[in-house]
Image (cartoon, rainbow, N blue to C red; front, top):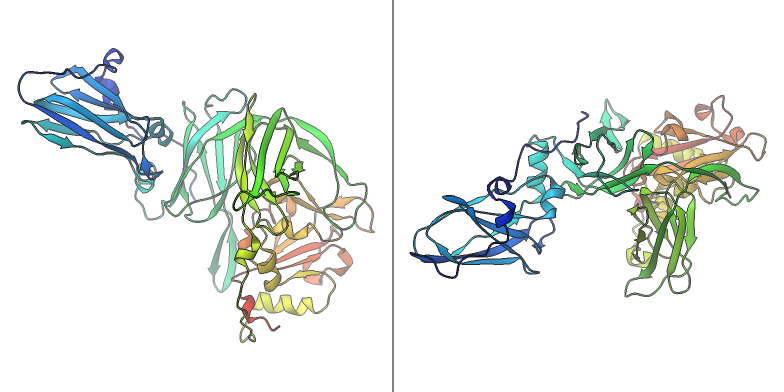
Length: 491
């Protein structure tokens, strides 16, 4: 997978070259010599799929560039120029949306010869057109992340920021499953603008922006089917503070002290169910920071002393599907994030189909055999579907002896040390029989939970099967990937 540098296409606004700023607010004369016509239309935003309000539409006489006329569209995106004399004109528009996309729509050349009502629609290019303009038309160009790198302290664009985008990919080679972590890197230009191409469409990606010692959090984003992610990324200096984190498992002890990011950021918001009903007791959390809280009886929450920058923000409540989305925390600004949770009941199966396995893949068959031993904690297909985790680490939060720390991709996972002491260590991670290194090295963090068919957890090194043991004596996490077919499991 190639690495690319973010760049702005070599396009300029021709209207800006033609029009002196002094004439931008000029009005068309009420009467002119010769034939007169009207030019009207609607400016449409093909990305947002709605009329574009606040667009500055300009009409330029090619015979005399000083004769330029402008009008600003309203909520309906409509514009109209009356009393247009015969001649040849250029028609175009300005809007901040175009700047954020780093692209300009083509200008229209209109020839007015007789009195007539001319309709001339204008539009922001579609997402597919924008992606093609930046990344080309090659079959493997995929999607694109388009945005600007900005300082969370000043809000200004920053040059030279590196935006690294990664995702999980599974391929079958020579009758074996191979997992890869493709990576694309984009570098912001003079205006902070960057483009990361070759992204998978309709897949979850993760991104992280850095500039020297400044950094954002790790963001989790779903690339839409049209292939375009339009989002800025905020970075800030890293400030660490020590915090004692209690285990998320059933084994409560004094916890472990870790360094987490902190700062002066503030987030407020409300969590509701469909129809506006407040959700009390919902757990709200800003990823990688250790900051979390709960909603009150009216569904409101507040988080303070947060680090500045872009981070993942997730909300969970019993009986509802977990929700996660990126959030920007900036200096001297109150970030407001409201969430509407969807009930799990709406997604429960109403029909159960039972049957017996006829043929299973070798990795899953081996999982079932080890499950009979009962020496570990096993999550089979049915439980994976029932729990529906967003991160793989979510499954470990109630496993005795496991500790999920704040961090990227759902959190770093530690196991209780050898001999049952309160010291913690990093377990080995195996994916389809292949050792991926310890959790902090990227084994578990890059696994998409939707790809996991089954998982087994051995928090005690003495219970780890021989093929999954290492000299570290810290237990193991064994993941089997593939398509889930829980309806074929004998009940």
